Image (cartoon, rainbow, N blue to C red; front, side):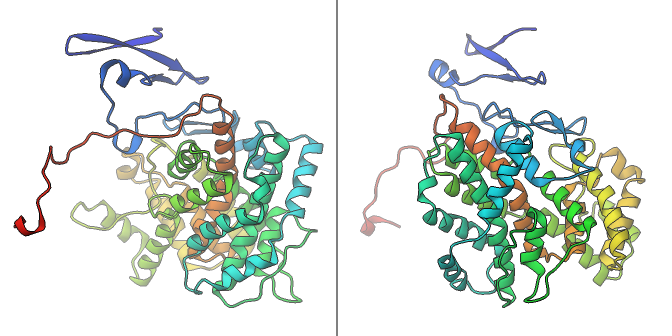
Length: 429
């Protein structure tokens, strides 16, 4: 197998090294192409461009494979533990008992936010989008922990990671309660990560919320399945901002803003909006499927298919299984959940979708699971951000640990005017 390729342009040959990854992925290294030839590559959306080499996550979209640090995602299904996965992604290995207990203790001790930060919540209108508040409050959080701007040791990284991962759920819960005019609920140091988040979301004064085990397991799994997904839009944003040596807080706040977009983190909200339109229109699942297949119709089936997965989304398969257990336990009679199940059942048997490999993706199931738990649609993307934060931290750390890191600076092909002359105001037409 060759370790280089030859590019011929205008009769001149240029040798491009071939880089092979640990799973035999191959890439042309074009790092010196411009300096040698004056040429750049053009790849709108970076769909065919590798921006880095990474040890964190492996995806094979054709085979439906997703692994964290080499461990298949399915290994976390039976006993989902988000804290364990967060450590794995950031530090490169599953935690031993000492490491796990230390990290859990750090998360517990850092759950509270400074009392002065509560005044910042009051400055937002109650109707403010939760993602706007979350991004702003993560940036604000950096002002209260300036000692963590420069992370030069593993100990410093552990402290910064624990603060961010712990406090993001507090910021999220306070954002939710502020929007409803409810009093803030302090974190309970006796509760584990997910239970504590649900406590801060749904408890009332003198009436603590105690989630069912199936709810805890479902939310743990939702967070785990969103924890990292290679070089997606928000992770690439964190890396790009971090490449300027911006601190971890600023880089992750930028990731929240990227995730906010409806083509990225907002996709599961679109699923719920679709289900609501079907319900309000009194359509059957089959009628909606038929409309989605009609080329003359503007109806779209949301939550099916994926840019990376050309077969099935392994995350969706896992969430489908946990959703069935959750719905059975809760005994929910939500009509939207029934519509969603009918849509999935029909699409998974319909040749139109099977031929095009349009299977339910993670957004299809995550939305209906979060809805069943009681989390409103405008908070779905916030939950996505909580889940994705360990991946952002891992990528920021990996990049900043690379001695060969360079500031990200894509090129462009200019298509504007040629040399033009300035025209004084009085001579302009």
